[in-house]
Image 1 (cartoon, rainbow, N blue to C red):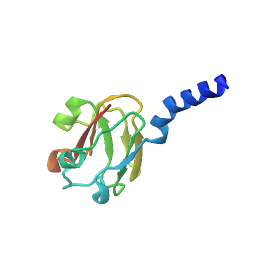
Image 2 (image 1 turned 60 degrees about the vertical axis):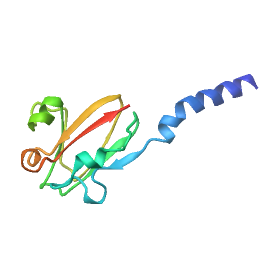
Image 3 (image 1 turned 135 degrees about the vertical axis):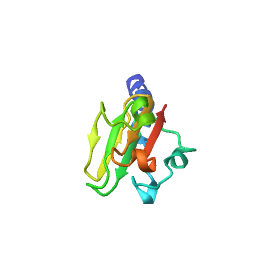
Length: 119
């Protein structure tokens, strides 16, 4: 009986991060596109390790580049921590911290960029 209780306790400590992970669609119905206010979109959302972002966009028209704070501030795609261009990219947060994303082609012109803080 003690072993069952112990296993149940372990499951309750580990499973919430897996069971309750949320996938956010960036920009909701508007997706990852020029002209979307991503500052407003992220406001009021709380992101946790295990959550993910789904970037939906027209492949060839946009891309998703994971950059550092400098890349975000200056719209610099290089050096980067990954560039995606499938039109439907899902990125999962494995570590807490700040994450920065830009569209390499529209960051400067339309402010197509996103900063997310993960707890």
